[in-house]
Image (cartoon, rainbow, N blue to C red; front, side, top):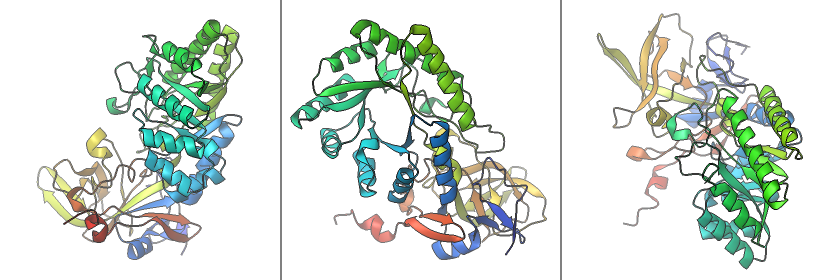
Length: 440
């Protein structure tokens, strides 16, 4: 079967191998979505392995000489952790569960960064025991816990101080993390960050190797990152002046946006890397300190564009004079972002060609919530019918990670496609899985 590039597959939105066959059928990684649906069922997350690995390499190359930590919270499973390791990236985890996945994958523990605003003592103890490379210290209580566990283990643990730089990213309020009023980090403006530095430098079980900040997620311009870099380098200078210590590392977090629709214009990773380096070098030269080793934490920017969710249409309900609701066999249990953030997506008819005029419809889920919307007002062919497959791109970040069993719906599988073949890397849940935790 031959394939063609289709004009309805916006390159920035879809995986790089996405094409349509000469019959109009969507192909991902060289695999027909009808074959995927027949073998693995729907809904299903279809992840393009070559695209994922390629994006890892782009970040590695763009930030040559820096540390690139893939943010596992975007999407993590054993296979993905292995890909990240094989492509030369490091890994950011923020819970004991994410650490367990990394260990199961055999990820080099010295390349792990442990985040979290409320790490438990057992989580810290396991991370220290296995030799996690760095902790990001998030509060004074967190600082004490990490120091105590490290001391009991006879370890000098390397740490970053997470700083709240007072930078408000232009994104949804739920994913802004750089402004003063939020739960993460030590405030720069209040002096809490400087005090955290003082306490860590006085503790023999901790080695302060750098500073960390993160201003938010799904950001499309570099201005916030530049301001954050300016303020973080300023703090590095203040630490040198007060303590005579020049910290060797600076982690500026992640947050780069991706294209969910054709209207989105994400930053080029090489331009972003060059701009970030330039501002850090300039700021360091201005205050006369050595340029630290940079670190960044892309998650969504790597995994987001690589995955497509494939659904089957179950009902088509036209409300004359209002709208048409097209119900699919998934919804908010496999993508909570639309309900949570009012996120915007696109979708296409994936299982056949159609010459019908498009009509704006609301693609909705099967759950007992009026807010269970998959895609708002998306143009789909007017002959869309029960049994058709529709595909929603840019599903690789926070979809499976935030999936739930609402209404006791089993979570979909993750199917990796590559060079015309497909395999399950996270299996579909079953009714037995749903009932396994019930005690009576």
